[in-house]
Length: 338
Image (cartoon, rainbow, N blue to C red; front, side, top):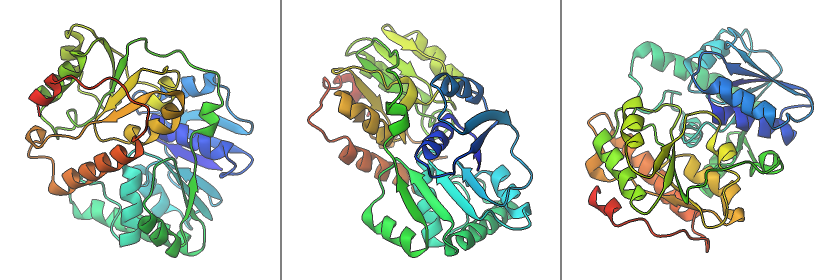
């Protein structure tokens, strides 16, 4: 099996897929060498002790895909789609692993027959055509019974039914391999804010975002964990806020926060972390607190479709994180920036 990963979460998801036996006895993970923060994530995963039969290497995305089993973290990637379309014949089996909320978007697009183009991507004809060809090839693999989705994200029953009708298998996991590793050191602060890429992507106003984190920090010391796509200016501003300790991007938050203790909490905007961290943290007595994006934050670059998807993701995260486990209430200052 060959796995193509382009982000820390994809890397961890590929390891989980191999450990669960969904990708064959021997697997080689190719981590895209030109992605910032991925090299350190590879080191962190290796340090945990890779499961038997698995190797991880930094490498470019191949021009063509092998013909047997391929694990992919980002079917929206132009590099992956080009390799898929160039291949003389598609792989006999494709296993898609988690890549944040894009995983849910992929599931919807496969069931609706849409082109595999990211929400908010420039609607150029060449890019749309490549996404359409890649979608067609993946659906043909599905028709032959060779396409699976290996995910820790919750899928609603209707979406599951549509995926099964298309021949797409759903393989669930709860980070069993990761939770079986030795406990990790964790931030000492009572609150951890998981950074969002929305400001760096120009989708929300940075000053509103910084004010929100500042409001959360009014409750007491917090650790801020930036997203790998972070705005350095935002991080610099947060470093000046009393009581805020800013980390550097790197390993997936599921790895770096798995050692949090009862009574601590994680605060996050709509993101995959709001859906995956409960799998790791709720059993430990750690609250995960999702926060919606207020309407006043959005910029003109945030399309109605994107806003709708993130609102739906927040509602889903609210249901997932509903638990007797509770952290201290968010400070009232948070409402002032809403």
